[in-house]
Image (cartoon, rainbow, N blue to C red; front, side, top):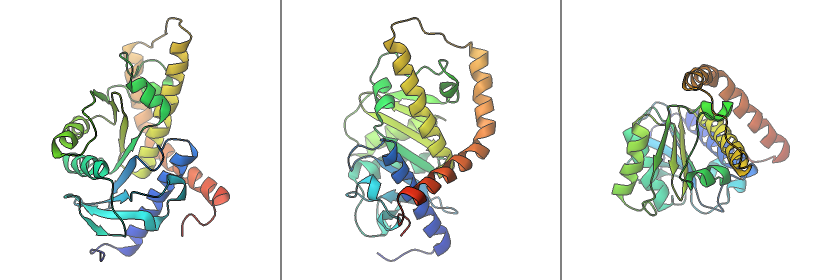
Length: 249
């Protein structure tokens, strides 16, 4: 379909960032075959977002594989279709929480493992986990997201202020104000979950930081995120340029 009125340079840069997110996620093993999905609200618009099209493996995603979608789930620019669960989840979240510009849904292994335990994610266990202290939600599994009701239930958790939502028996949703912030959170969430799984596997008693220390550390992370996020994301794109030349085409 024909493009809507958006600055072409802005749209091209956003599509490149989306392709980068998907490719670096594949490098880290965060994808599940051709499934899972990310979205990015277009700068200056609250009614349009970018979404990876269903079909390509994340390791082969290019800017041309990124669709422009409206809040009703209609593809308004780009060739191909979005996965039905992707359309339901992302359009509902972008509608419910406009400041969550970038929304990432993955089945990355350690976070999905933690999401399948009764204990759940422990935000006072490590420095990395403390970055999410006070900003995590957990939802029971409600089946594949193929209707408005389930999409709205997931969106409500994000609308409540959570930056990471653990979907029991399923995976996670992570949001950020930008691709860089969302990537930073996704990377460190998986690292925190990996250490938690390893710590729990020892069978020894876990050492948890005091509540006030976890709160203090979360504030420190929030202050550092605007600087560290772009630095980390730029580094990831440089690695793609080195190891996967042509990915920007």
